[in-house]
Amino acid sequence: MKEILSLNNLEVKDILEILDKAKEIENNPKPHELENKILSTVFFEPSTRTKLSFISAMYRLGGKVIELDEGGNNSLKKGETISDTLTMMGLYTDIMAIRSPYEGTAKRASEILNIPVINAGDGANQHPTQTLLDLYTIQKEKGRLDNLNIAFVGDLKYGRTVHSLAKALDKFTGNKLYFIAPNEIQVPSYILDSLSLEFEILEDYESIIKDMDILYMTRIQEERFDDIEIFKKCTGKYKIDKEILNISKSDLKILHPLPRVGEIDTNLDSTPNSVYFSQAKNGVFIRQAIISLLMKNHVKPKYDGVDRVCKNSKCISQKENLGGKWIYVKEEKKCFYCEK
Ligand code: CP
Image (tube, helix red, strand yellow):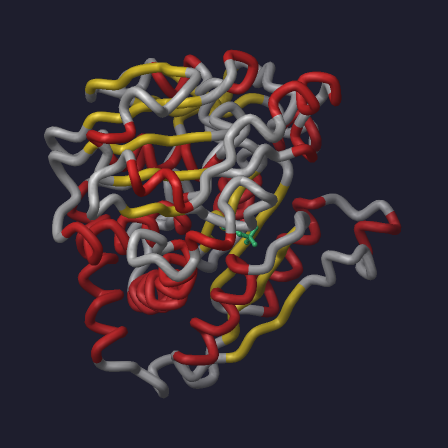
């Protein structure tokens, strides 16, 4: 089983293996499978769903968990590097889930540790385990992962869940994506250039909502903006409530990675169209599946050679002065860590 670091190196067969395993675990829990194994959660950014569903998943498999205190009560405060911190956690545990504001941190962990590593979100780059639970939810709700019309709304520039899910949907046939955001926070060109499927770029959803199967709402992420004036301009533009169901298909499903901060009115929560809470619950089954598969057998990613230093200021290679390492993604040479 490949480590879950990026959607770039997950093939359809890998995705379906994880989704099938999640379904098997949901139907037949495995409460003793990982007794005496320890998961580390190394989160350098806040999290409710991802971190706690990983912890719940490990407990439900019979394992144990240790956490790095993301409140800062650890030796990063004394100047220890992220790389050394990861090395330590890797020596104490059997598998690691890592979240970081620096793109490529999970790749860095994977490079220096001998245990399986899972990317639980790296900056504005990717959030592959969220994507797997999104796909699991779509498959449950729609019975398929192909031939779907899917609208993404909100912060599509910094929204790593959008970047990962768009890449995943590109692996299945007949999907069409609609990216709805103000120009300032539209999907980055490096994501659009990597897609083969059909897509449209829009600022409003009113004209297309009647054709949508899935509406994927996102939060405008204040913490990622370098310019607070752009955040103020973009925030509050998209707010949906029950009225949207008057102009949508009756079986529209509304997803959101959460947390929400006002973009979905609570009057939608009790409708059969809203699946964001069951989507979050599905995260436990998906993360159980990932941990279970990786603990049986895991494969480290490879890189070739040492070359140019990455120019992405948010890349872990710049934060920790790691020098340049490059890989090929779809025949294009990219930074090993952040894939930019
Ligand atoms: N969906 C998600 O990543 O939520 P958290 O930030 O709470 O983990």
